[in-house]
Image (cartoon, rainbow, N blue to C red):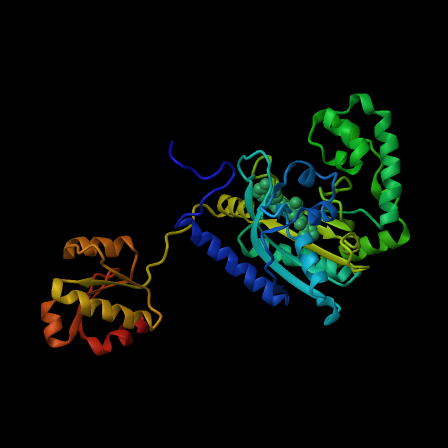
Length: 418
Ligand code: HAM
């Protein structure tokens, strides 16, 4: 049996990797413009972090974690998301001692044991940002704007920003009680999954895609009706800031998100273009999380975008990526005597920042020219017996097919000038 990548994981091969580089450059640009610094945390953490941070009753912790015991008997988990890890690192290194607000971004692989399908993988990648230290709506709006700018600059526009508030923790608790009372009245008509969730994680029933559940959810009490003054003021301030920034949104009172740490603002970027995997990104305010992880009372808000889903949407909207631009040089060595000087010349050009392909297969000149075209270089530089003897090279522009003989000492100037 031949070996294959594990189900739900995939190789990112050339030329697809070009798309990743392009969006990664955009992440870095947007993060720099909003003054977010990058953080990289380990891919595995102690299992306890996610149990406490994401929540025991969530799908992620209950069903989707890659948890294993290492040789020392410790229970470890491949990270299913980044927020808990970022908060752990902030607490561990007391980073907020030096600055009351920390703005951090990250990009990297995450792991969830979910049923693989288009846009849903067991190893996937997220780009995200967390603004830590401020309880104010300005930071909620800033985080949403970072996500929105990123999606737009990556070429995505066919998405909706859905937004809701879960209010303060006491509002959330009060709403939870009302919702449970309502759902219990309709218990018999709910799907089996939702019947179970009424007792374990009732807000998640609002997320159900089951037709029977949807009909019941449509008449459920709305959280927007139980908001206290503080929660309402916070939510309206976030919406006003989005209005000022011209960021369109839709209020969705049933949006609750699948992780336990949220309060106040929650949001999701959804699309109808990718089938069932409709969430390209999401996030919200998570003031309770620091305390859940032993870090005291620290307010925070953040988001993550699923990079694979965003790339699917980008390709859907932009079509297949346009042909790669020609770049660099193919150095053709003609005859054995030219091999060493050609390699020395290649190194000289690389040290000037040029992309240089050399022949390592001892091909004929005809085969080397074919290779040069396959590598999409701009120039072929040819070095044979005649050129070696008089200190020249032949430079062929592969786009115009024009050819000229130039002195070797002038080569960089000519190649770098164009
Ligand atoms: P999340 O909604 O669980 O939030 O994930 C964010 C995004 O990751 C989703 O909208 C989706 O695009 C992508 N994603 C999730 N699971 C998969 C999968 N199996 N395959 C492909 N893509 C997937 C969080 O992770 C929170 N940490 C967001 C956050 C940051 N909240 C506050 N700060």
